[in-house]
Structure formats: structure tokens, C-alpha cells
Image 1 (spheres, rainbow, N blue to C red):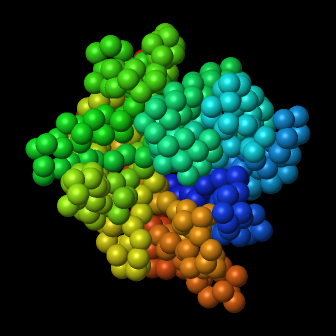
Image 2 (cartoon, rainbow, N blue to C red; image 1 turned 90 degrees about the vertical axis):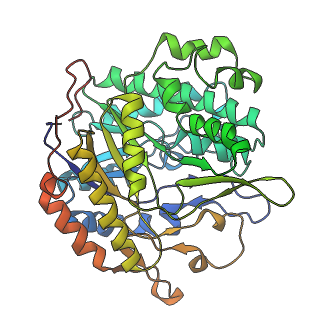
Length: 425
């Protein structure tokens, strides 16, 4: 990527939790729930209408490989071919929370790194020279949280030791994936995407916990890039929660580069305030944030990693006016960061249209009751309208930003370029 370039992107929510909920029997395949499997051609046409040069796009591994020795590429071939034909560069999400059901124990299966590396290899070989950007796994921390700490998703662990076990297994898979991609094509750009949070507290007694939670936000990136050694703030915490020193040493011996870091941030989710309730139990509030959130996080990540950054997901929920306000605030913050020399090189409005909330899987109400309108397009909430895509004023606003290219966010002062790093475009 040239130092003065800027990538405007969109994406379609692609959470894939294929395990039926034990009480409701529901799964969580966002492509199925939003009708994307049936409408993929038209939905990709909407991307083209925006003029976006690239788009994050998830591959449903559970459909590509429904059994260990069975591969089915029809949907993926058609969708990615259409994006490429329309001059939209895919940023391929290889894993987005869920795995094929045949991988027993999910991420804790001892052969998971081998399975995911084989899958990545086959896809990269199939699109050799045509797809350059891959996300090995979207949001490692959130995956480990829901699979290992909350127990919502397989393998249903519910402890900090479960979280640590999942985090280490997930990161081993990320490393195996990147090495596999590099063997196929050294020009591939691994795009490491994680959800970010900003923790604070007004209670001095909770300050150490807020600092620990903030360090956990960075844990996946720290692990895969070889930063977790005996000096790391979480070293003893990891050991206390079941981590093995030899397993931690694996990451130190073969660290990955971070050519581009994707940060997922939302004004409704990302700010976290710790407090105690009347019974002394730890509680977390999520106050709605302003554009200053983007400023703080951009500086925090650049100071820590010194790598180019891209906003890989952001949006607000509610009325179109509220969403437009967040678009204006967040883009203004991007301009400020770039003017101050922080190499923020891209912005992704996510999702492109509404998603179905994760509560659907354990809920019992009709689908339309779980729509979360966060997109440039709404999904029609009338059950008789079959989730029609409804254009909002955000479409024209975003198209205008895309057409402006880098001019929409201003120049990058003191352009960041390290010739020792893998180039990012």
C-alpha cells in the first residue's frame, strides 16, 4: 500500500456458530439468517454501488468442508469471483467464531492447527494471485471469551482457565494459518483483526483489575507477535490459569509480523467501566462513546505495536441519524490521527446491512425480533417483506467518502513506512 493510500471497506456480518443450542436447537449462521446465501449476487452488487475498493468477506468453513475429506467450493467460488470481477478486493475472513461440527472439542481439538492450516492452504491455492488479504481468525479474544469464559459456544468452558486454554489454542491456529498462507504465496497479507476495548474505573480498588482487563485486550496480538515473556504483565496470570511455559515459548520462538492490525470498535460496546454493585459483585457498564474513542485507541495501538492500523469494524445502532453522527465523528477522528502521524490506513463500516443478534440462538422469538439495525442498508423488519434491503441516507454519505478516497480523511503526516516490514498492498 502506498503511504498516501486509504482503503474504504464494507463487510457482511458472518458469524457462524453451527452447534445447535441445547435448549432451542437454533444455530447462528448469519448468511443464512439474513438471506445472504440466496441474495449473495445482489448483496455484492450493493458493495459495487458504493464503489468500495475492498470488502471483508467471510468464508463459511462449515459449508466448504462439511466432513473431514469432503470439500464443496461452489458458493465461495461464485461469491469471490463476483467480487473480483466487480473490482472489489476480498479481505477473506477464514474463521469467524465457529468451526465445522466434525471438529470435536472445537479449538481444543489437538489437530485444530493442522485442520485450519489445510483449509487455509486449499483456499489460498484456489485463489492464488487473485486474493491477497486474509484474516486468519476474526477476534481471537472474543472467540476465547464466548467459548472459554462464558460457555456460550463450543467447547463450552466457563472459567478463566478455559479462556486461557482457548486463547492459546486459537493463537496456535493463527500461527499455523499464517505459515500456511506464506508457503502458498509470500505476497499474501495476513490481516490480524481483534475486538478492542477501553477499560476504566472510578473505583481505586478496581484499578488493578481494569489494568489487567486492558492487557487481556492485547493478549492475542502479543502472543502471536512474540511479546509474551516473563516480563509481560500477564505472564504469572497465564501460568496461574493453566498456561504451560513450553507452550508460551512456542510463540516466542516463531513470532509473526503484524503487517496490518485491524481494530473492531463500536461506540455502543467498546468503552468498559468497572464498578461494584450493592452486593460487591464486579459489574461492567458500557457507556456510549464519542469519536474520542477512535483517537484513544488509535494512539494506544500504534504506540504498542508500531504497525499500520485499519478500522476493520465500526458502526452505531439505532436511527439513521444516530448512525450518520457516528460516521461523522469517527471519520473526523481518523483525520486527526492521520494528521498526527498515526498510520490509520483504512475504515470499514460493518455491517453493510443489519445483523441478527447473537441472542437469537438461545432465544425463542421470531427472527425479525432479533434484527439489529446498524448498517448502511436496513433489513425490512416486516415479516412479510422477506428481509428486503432498505437503503438509508448512510449509503449516499458513505459513497461520497469512498469516492473521495484518501482526500476524505486527509493526508498522513510523517508517513509511516518501515522497509523491513512486509508491504501491505
